[in-house]
Image 1 (cartoon, rainbow, N blue to C red):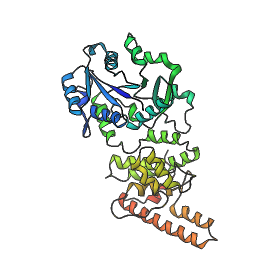
Image 2 (spheres, one colour; image 1 turned 90 degrees about the vertical axis):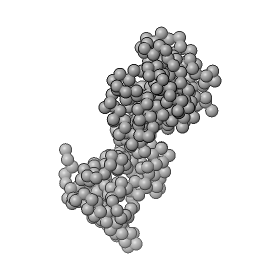
Image 3 (spheres, rainbow, N blue to C red; image 1 turned 90 degrees about the horizontal axis):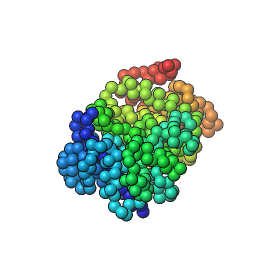
Length: 386
């Protein structure tokens, strides 16, 4: 197992934020704790570099039992903190990461993926990228130029000496450019690694996003499509289903951002295992293995579902939106199921089962119409909005 450390840069002035960024809260954790925990969960030991407001940040490090090292020259810029962190790396380090505390929503799964890749290759530098190209995955030779490169870079311990010798011109990025021949770009499912926190507006945005991390963002859904090599026609179908779900969500006033994102991710991902036997259950297992179990129930029940009592659920809306789309075209529930019954007209038992599914779908439709106060069949079978 690789011995890995993470240099967390927390030495800046936070001048645009106007408050000490490492000690701001994201949910029930501070920014520093949120970031450090992601590394710790992946088996990586954090080292926090302090500078400005060092006493306050070191108190937080003590509370969290994190090693802190002070950069007396923090005013010289971020690279001086990178060098301070490198000086603190133990001699037994195999791998180290470097990232500012400004980017706190890195997923632990991203760090694990980088470690696993480092264990299998001899790359000196590994950059995580988000390949969220909508219809066609990026070929490997375009990862460097077209993939959305995020944090943290994963570096071999042998680069420590090179960093300590470097004069700092152009910062760490300029130095790492010298190692392009031994640099790899690893696609990961993590839009949070692209989000920094420089201003109060950024902080408010990250606070909102933090509450939604249990389900994938739209960017992450597209990256999942690419990770599983989802065929184009299924992507187009999923987009059509998502448009229907969006129309329904517009009519529901009392739902939360998490509810909405769960529905949208559920419709985008409901057919990720299409073509596999019992594809709904297979898709639910797949999305759980990819690190998003919260959306698995929506995928597992999108083919067959009975209405429940109480408020309309995310799974019911994913199920319903899917039934209003045939391929990429809008249709009524009756037409969707009647066409199936016509195909199996010679098999009364199958027709009876399809009729039962239609009744279940109509019950969910009725429930959704009560929740929205809208004739959804009339709304959803109109011409698609431009």
